[in-house]
Length: 429
Image (cartoon, rainbow, N blue to C red):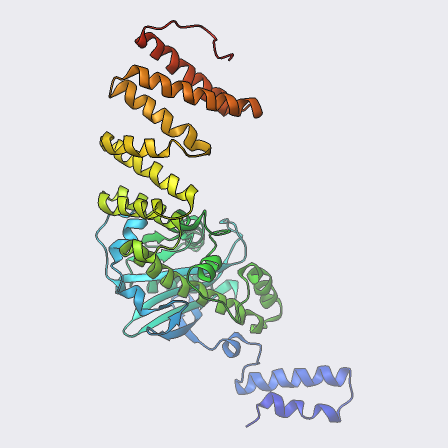
């Protein structure tokens, strides 16, 4: 059956243009107000949802539901829920006892700007959570600025169900802005444990990808390509237009963008968890293994830390292999296992670049302070000085000057210990 608007518009062909056309639109709006039929531009038509009553008036939200077996990129949404939550606590440096997954939500917002000041509004609040066999994304929408207090009240009520919030740069932006909006609305925002995935992502992929934006991670790491999605940078412009003309249809892509962000948070959690649980199987880039090795070292899981570095050292990429041996040597040095560290430093002596100096410096320190072999320490120091002087003759930098000064002092100290003669300024500094 045709809508009332369509039936009225069918008479347009029998009317004159100009004033008659304007009058037709007025008739349509008047008829819709009498019958309760919403225009196609209304958010309730463009993005069907639920009107919720609060002590501060009505607010609007919609739920987007996914079966947990639905895939988002390489992973089904159910995979995240199989991850021990302690893994995410570890990479986010949280030492509290892990909660259960039904107490975890994923949070993302769309805003009218990038600042956290009073003039920046959150107009779309997205919260993802697991419920039975579904993953639900609930989106609270600010239909008008006057509804903000009602929206914040409803949001607070929903968040009270959860103990943990997962976000991406949420600590630096979303949560700070949320605190500002709650303060201005004179409402209390209950604190939650916050797991921000941006720092772990940077540790793993900062040197691998062009950037660590969420959309880059989902394309390059998770294997997901967005469709029907409006870039977040267009959100302010589209929302301001909606506030002017009331047409919510252009916002559909922003709502989709918000849903994608939250789904990506869930599957990114799964991917990071699998990397931590199965590093030798899941990691595909040396930098991932370096990042994982650092975590294991911080968690005092020495065997896993060493295993990651050993795997990189066996790769064909020579630069990464040398870096892995170097990191492994420092790992042993910190634990006083100098027999292993010395072997690795000797293995690195034939390398290029920093490997011509760094292992020689460490070996010189070892032979001077541990083995008390001053002659050998002096020979290594002289070799290092020659390398640095050669570099300095091509490009003189403050760093090389400082390095040469340090080596000069070590050489003079070793000459004394060897019974040699110290000559001031012999290196031409």
